[in-house]
Amino acid sequence: MITDNGLRMPKLGLGTFRMKGPECSEAVLGALARGYRHIDTAFMYGNEDAVGEAVELTTTPREEFHLTTKVWWDQLSPDAMQASIERSLTALKTDYVDLFLIHWPTPDIDLAASLGKLVNIKEQGLARHIGVCNFPLGLLRRAVEEVQAPIEVHQFEYHVLLDQSKLVNYCRSKGIAVTAYVPLAQGRLAEHPALGEIAKKHNATAAQVALKWLLDQDGVSAIPKASRVESQTSNFDAQKLMLDDADRAVIAGLPKDQRFVSPPFAPDWNS
Image (tube, rainbow, N blue to C red; front, side, top):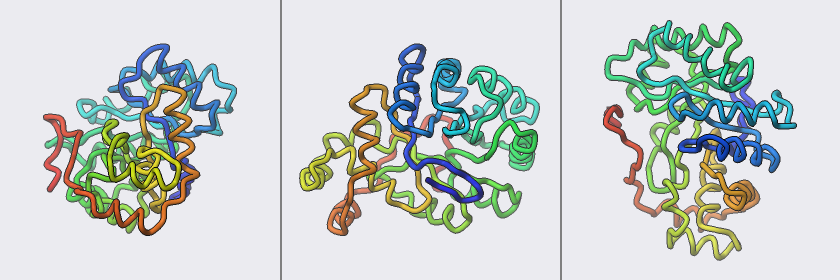
């Protein structure tokens, strides 16, 4: 559990990108039944209504699980952000989300206006916590140090094949929690040979090794997508794994220059 800034965000969550309809509802219901208490969605995923079905049907009390959603990059004016959160809450069948994030920045983002509106949405009680996604270090610094926005969480691509130490260290220095998306590099790590060797030693899987490497880091959570029962169970069980210094040394030696999510509207990652 990450508890910075009053957060109570479980380190392991369920990502729902590309899940739709009944498959999504069943995956979320199943995850909650298996002990997951952190569900991540977004307006852009087109599945908030399906997640909302699970929120309505689950026997898990709403206050016992963390729910994140996000506003899309073309809706960052204050009025559009207000409409977005209200639309999301209706679809999700809840009065509030635990975390509301700006999904992607735009080159012309009005940081003061957009981040100010995030604060206002929190003040209205529609979101318990607020943050951003996919901000490169320079933009995050501007948001925190110039605008002085009370960002509580930063969500970005992070896994054993991508060095994000500068972002992670900055977030840690400012008390900002990190959520790693595509923590399994879009499934590529399941057959990774070096991770597989570590996994054999622990009677685990390569994916579990990759996940536990993230979960062992202070202030870092991870939200692997998993619709199948077997995948959800395996990811959940990764929390039991105990990596040692030799394992971490192997992982530290892996190439860390592979980014898999960089759409045409992505920012300059080096800015």
